[in-house]
Each structure stands twice: as structure tokens, then as C-alpha cells.
Amino acid sequence: MKWIDRLWRRAALRLQKELYNIYYVHGPRERLTMGKNNRLANTLFNTRSGTIRIGDDVIVGHNVSVLTGAHDYEQPAGLRRTLEDAGRDIVIEDGVWIASNVTIIGPVRIGAEAVVSAGSVVTRDVEARSIVAGVPAKTIRTLQINSGLAA
Figure (cartoon, rainbow, N blue to C red):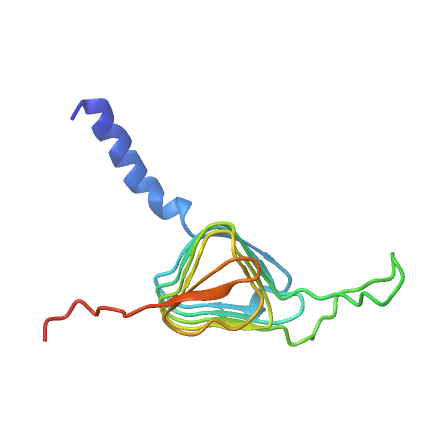
């Protein structure tokens, strides 16, 4: 390996911690709760109309939107306001993997160890240990998680 390759590799490893966990919260920050050991990449959290709770060991790909926002659409344009306490809460349980370009629209619960495929739009609850895909997201498979421990 050339010295320049080693230098780039070393720089990338140091920057990795800085490049993960980049996110923006639109709304009250206290409505967002995050567990430990999560990896987020360019994620938008909208907490205007509900709370967002994220468990431990969650991986979120690039350009993911987690939206609780709701507006009073029956009002005329210019008078539409955010419904602050609409109860559009979102729960993402432990070990979930959310691929890139996913949109999650509350109220929903994504069960533990679930996988949300790239480009999906989640509008309903996702069962634990399932893979969902599509617009709207639908279950395409159930996972058999291997704990990696010998019997």
C-alpha cells in the first residue's frame, strides 16, 4: 500500500466519527430522544407535531426524513398552521436499519431489528425483524436473526 493510500485511510477513519450523527431537528429538540451507539447520516427529524424516540444500535442512511409534522389543511392558504400536539409520535426500536432516502411519516412504530429498504415511505407500523420496501412500504420478508452465539 502506498504511503498516500495509508494517509487517506487514516484520515477517513478519523473523520468517520465526525461524518456520522449529522442530523437536523425541525421543531422542539426535547421531543427527540436517542439511545446509544446510533449511526445517522444527514437525517431530518421533524418534531413539530409529535415526539420521536430512537432506541439503541440504530443505523440510518443518507437523506432520511422522520416526520411528525401535520398542518390544519382545512384552513385557507396563508392561514395553515402546524398542529403542535397532533400525537403523530414515531418510535424506532433497537437495532433498526433504515436505508438511504427513506421517509417515515408518523404516527408509526418500527419494531426491533427491522430493515427499511432504500427509497421506501413508511406510513404504517413495521413489525419487528421484518424487511419492508416500497411506496407505501409493505413487508416483503421476515428475518431470522442469528445471535452469532454458539449453542
